[in-house]
Image 1 (tube, helix red, strand yellow):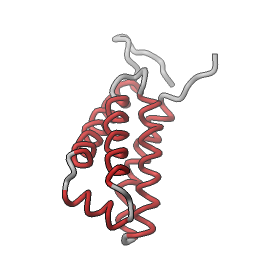
Image 2 (tube, helix red, strand yellow):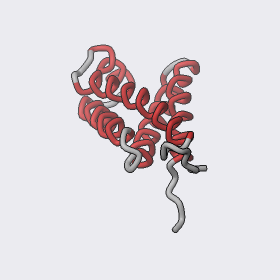
Image 3 (cartoon, helix red, strand yellow):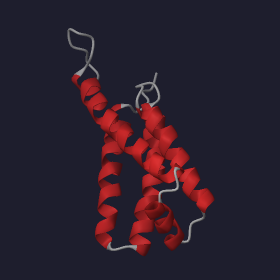
Image 4 (spheres, helix red, strand yellow):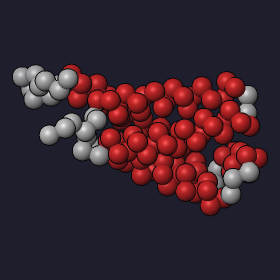
Length: 124
């Protein structure tokens, strides 16, 4: 899956990079909204019964995960961390919100799953 072309980058590496950059930007945006105490986000967390500290913890996980997505050496770990965050988001939306609200985190989870597959640790 990781055969290099003449320039030293495989098509999977290029695809992964093209996927990781916008995902990282999205998670940085979410982290900013969480860590800045955005009124809508804070209100949602309160409505769901989650504490302000939990909101900040999620924001920190989004920032760290987004940063870890960028280098190929850490993107597997970042995708794994963010997958956990998104599984929690899907659960929360399914429990408290209309079914359709779980669609967005589910699609982002699928994108992270693609990164996990491309960058899965190889046996030595």
